[in-house]
Length: 93
Image 1: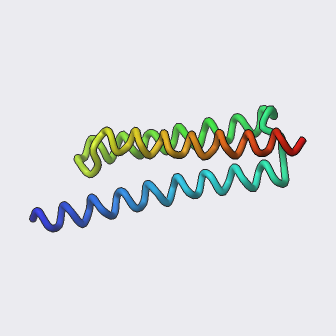
Image 2: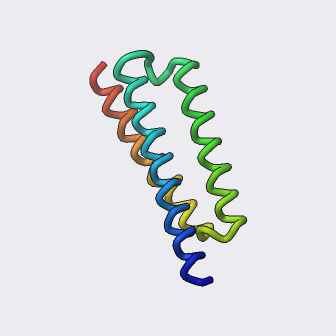
């Protein structure tokens, strides 16, 4: 049973990382092709995606699939990547 829980845990972590990567890619595409970071549509997409990921992390944490600190680290890493992306975008303008 412990091995099965470990498999679920690893799968949950991998899925959350994939979702974080998908959000980053979505924002990259949006910044490259569609809108500026100051645009309300950009902010709406970013806020919605980050909220969704935070809810997924909360759910996985409540199920005991990931540790709360691991979820916080995932969000923090994504926020840092998005901040770097935003800074690069602004320096191009």
